[in-house]
Image 1 (cartoon, rainbow, N blue to C red):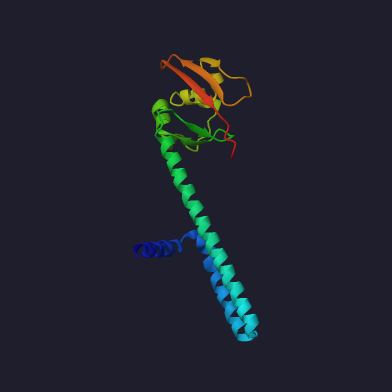
Image 2 (tube, helix red, strand yellow):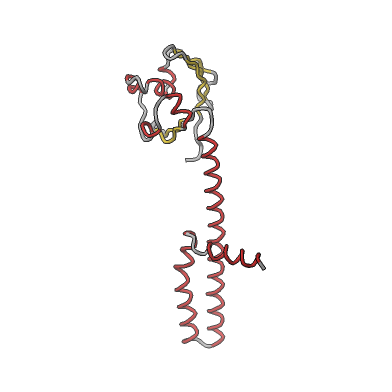
Amino acid sequence: MPDIKNQKDNLSSASWLPEKGIFWILLPFLIAVIAVGAISLEPFLAFFTAGLAVTIGIVVFFYAANLSKINKETRVRQRELENVIVNLADAIIVYDRNFKVIFFNPAAEKLFQLTAEEILGHQVAPQDARDDSRRLLVQVVFPSLAPVMISRSEAGVYPQVVDLSFEHPQLELRVMTAVMADP
């Protein structure tokens, strides 16, 4: 008996998820079709129309339920991935084609001594190296600006791997750059 109650509670709470909006928009139209059919059609056609409307409603409801389940699983996976990336000991910087920073994890904050709030949304440019607080970040994003750069991969092959050395601060970094294939 408790299983039936749990299933009923799950169905009830799932019925109001945003993905179910299409079902709730469609429902009054289906009810109207059934009502008009019952009033104006012969019994056989009214029954057929009602059956068709109920079938459409059921299909849309379960399609929306499946979409809701997929969206929930996607959100869970995304949160798990974000937690992994945020808690990595390696600094991770994600930027777009225009070098606008869109992700900056806590390890990057520690390495570059910049907060995510300071750098997120900022477009990194070579001239930013004039700013002492951003020089290291600029030299990592544009490795050719670093004092010492040793390429460890072939040009045009990803991931690109370079070793960078700095005197002030005394630091050696291995930088890996990869293109995100999925926009």
